[in-house]
Length: 384
Image 1 (cartoon, rainbow, N blue to C red):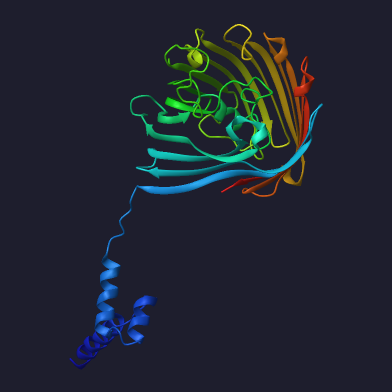
Image 2 (cartoon, rainbow, N blue to C red):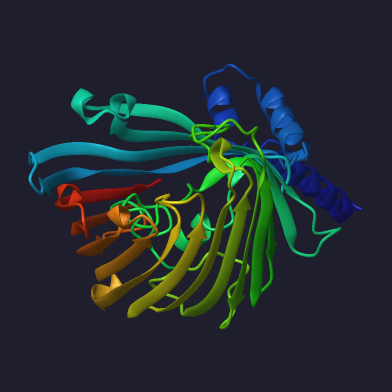
C-alpha cells in the first residue's frame, strides 16, 4: 500500500514539475520580470501551443531589375557625348490569390529624350508597363493561363529569356531602333500561354500599338483596330514549362511567330510580321539566329526583311564569364533605312543579383552616314 502511495506521489510531483516548466522564451521573460504569475505563464504557453497555425494562400511579392551604367557615343559627323545612365528600372509587385492566380503591377523607369527631342536633353520617365490579372485555366485548357490587361505580348519576353540575354545593353533585333524596329514587349489586351515539356505557345489579341503608345493614330484617320499575334515553339530537348537557366542547362528551341495589326497606327494598311527563330544553349556556349519579314505601307521603315545572329562563349569561372556578340541586318523597302548593327562585349555574372558588362555597339547605315555611330558601354545589371 505504501509503495502505491509513493508511486502516485512521485507521478504527481513529476506532473506538477512538467506543468510548471516554461519553455517559451518570451513568456519566460515576462514571468521572470514578474509581469505574469507562474500559473498565468503556464496557461498562456498551453493556449499558445494549442492555437492552430492558419496558412493563407494570399501572398504579396516584390521584385525587379535595373540597368545602370555609362555610355560614350562616337557619332559619325556629329557631336560625341558621354553620360551616366539609368537605362531602365522595373519594380514588380505581385499579389497572389492562390498558387497560380495573381495580379501583377510593374513600374517602368526609362531614360529618354525629353519630348523625344535630343536638343532638350534626357529625362527619367515613369510608366506602367504591366497591369494585369493572371488566371490559370488548366481545368478547361490543359497547361494554359492568360493575362488580361496591359500584358506581355507573345514574342519578346520569350526571346529575352532564351536567345538574347543582354537586354541591359540592347533590345532584341525585333525591337531595336537600329534593328527591325517593330513592336515593344507589352500591350493592352489578353495573352494566352500554353506550356508543355516539348511544346509551348503564346497567342492573343491586343490593341497593337504597344504599352507606351496605346491607341496611337499618327499614320492616318482610321479607327483603332486590334492586333492578333502568336508564337509556337518546339522545345526539342524539353524544358518548355519553365524559363531556362543558360549557365547550367542545355536546350534547343525552334520557333515561329506571326502577327497582323489591322489599320496599324490609324493607317490604311495592316502591319504583318512573320518570323522564324532558333537557339541552342549549353553551359559553355549559346548560338541563336532569326529571320523576319514584315510589311506595312509603301516606303515604310517597317516594310522589309532582315536577319540576326548572336552567340555567347562562357569558358571561365564555372561559365560565369561570357564573351558575346550579335550581328543584325535590316533591308527596308525604303533604302534610306537599310542598316547593319554589330554588338560585342564581355560579361561577368558576379552572382544572381549583379552582372557586370563591358561592350561596344556599332550602327552602320548603307546610305545615311549621319546615323552611323559607335557606343562604348559599362553596365551594372541588377536583379532583386
